[in-house]
Length: 173
Image (cartoon, rainbow, N blue to C red):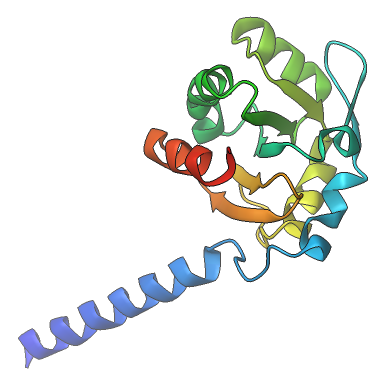
């Protein structure tokens, strides 16, 4: 009886874990223009001055990464994204959206500079992430767009080198 009880408990736990993973996945149902529309009208201040206007990036293969200085996986993937941005220059444009305070982003970038543009959205950036298919607003969150401005893929969580290379193959032509 004891063994049967433990097996049932293990099965229920596995089922709940699977349901939780499904529930937390970013929405992948649509790459339509309507799904990506909120991004193209977005304008964000940049830490070093100036403005990041996403409408100016339309027509490029684009990887948008939502991140924050207080998010350990976000901080961990920044050097990887920076390297990817340099390797893919002219093929895939990488842009960061900081869901954070400008002062914290400025201090982080002074210690860990990156070669790609970063707009500061503050905590309102999590709303944009939700509109682009991240219902939980979790970080890091990356969205890949093709040259037509359509969403090709989304990833909630830290990106891996193999994923970035696969994405580059899918959108760079």
